[in-house]
Image 1 (tube, one colour):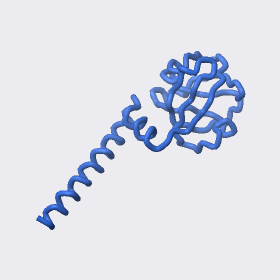
Image 2 (image 1 turned 180 degrees about the vertical axis):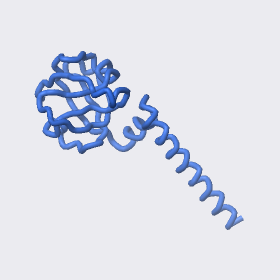
Image 3 (image 1 turned 120 degrees about the vertical axis):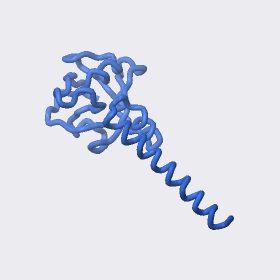
Length: 129
């Protein structure tokens, strides 16, 4: 893959788990797709993030935590690999991401589904017992 210059995200996006990348480099992964980005120079350095677009074809934009996980600094070139996460790994990412704007609604959804399922089970048991 092409090496792209690493840039920081805009101030409004600090702390988020997103990577902004031109669509031509996303390997068919759609906007808001969750993918693992791996530093090819050191494959043990990777990070899972939401992919969003950007018009700059020569740069990749990411937050501090993502850059740190990849072992890369601003203005360095990054040779990377992208792989879209499966649904189970996506759920795990949603529940474990450090961004509270993501993990709080994810945990609320999990608890809602669990309580809804428990309610259905108890409701069915009350009909038959």
